[in-house]
Image (tube, rainbow, N blue to C red; front, side, top):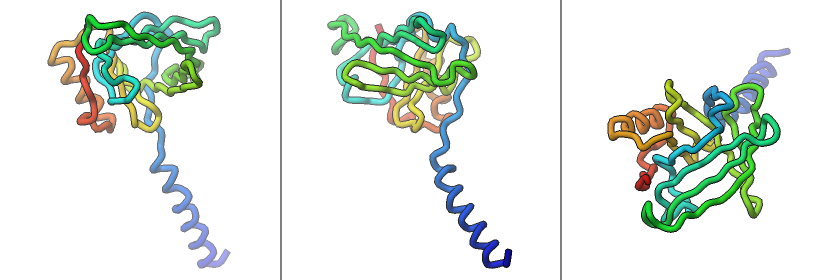
Length: 174
């Protein structure tokens, strides 16, 4: 191969490689099956039209019939924590059920689908951060309402993961 062909070949590799670097997926956490049991409180989230007016949000997980299935109930209260309860049921499937178990795709009514990837879970497993694969939407969940200090730690962790925490909203908890 002459030097011009080698140079062209290398240039093509560089051009092909750059788009894949720009769209690299975020690293996910390793979670156990027990992560998908019980209720998690929504502490912070990205604003979305479907959550406008929602406060005291939560997600409840239950194991599905198969090891890669998770039943999901998302809920919140309208306007104030004592407002009208709104819920939506979804059926989740772990796309990486034999490895990290951190990638959950949930199908909701009307063919709405969301990908929730667990990006971080606290050492004591009491809170976690999830996002969509492109980091457009991000959620912070906890088993309990955190103190201000704990919330500050959660937000800093989201920032170290590369998320613009200025976009987060913190609806009142129940």
